Length: 124
Image (cartoon, rainbow, N blue to C red):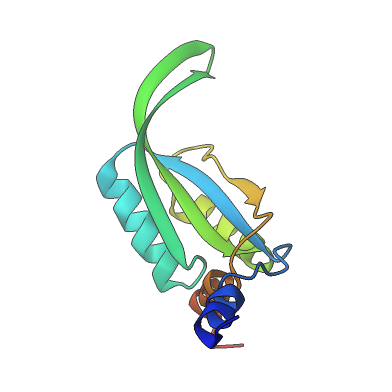
């Protein structure tokens, strides 16, 4: 096997992923989503936040609702979840914001190293 192939295989090795998760939340519009995303990344609570337009169907205060929303997928470390959840609750305009943690079950070592760097609290 050539050195290039060995290097490429090493760069795509999968790492232990139990320390990583994706956190989902939604906002009412793009402006709220972008503001929250920037705040999360600036606070190093998430390394990356992706925003998608979605339509949500739900029951709220007895009424069936169907509303356009923006869903944020926040890539972070599991040990940052509680701080992130508190941050979202404090910054979010909804009375009951969605805050859902989904474990990452596989990921490339390079990406997860980058995620570590992006969520490292320089004050620690």
